[in-house]
Length: 108
Image (cartoon, rainbow, N blue to C red; front, top):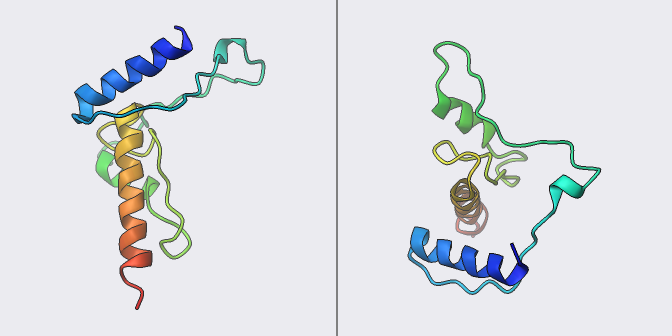
């Protein structure tokens, strides 16, 4: 897919999924199949022990560190949308909201 065509496609998907019109200025489209440093990593659904809750697993995985100031976000950190663009979007919003509440709004 050509660069400009990819940008238009992503803008269209954002419009349909989030009902928001966005204007993408630039986009990175890595060619992983041609990259000798790429070692086939991808997000995968975790294999949980019998009786272990997926919600509890992701809650622990996404827990902030360093007294609530270091948050994890990305497509792998969302219980319902893990591995997808929506997972990155929602987990990024969650991390930003947590930072705002814990760091900015609670300071005198």
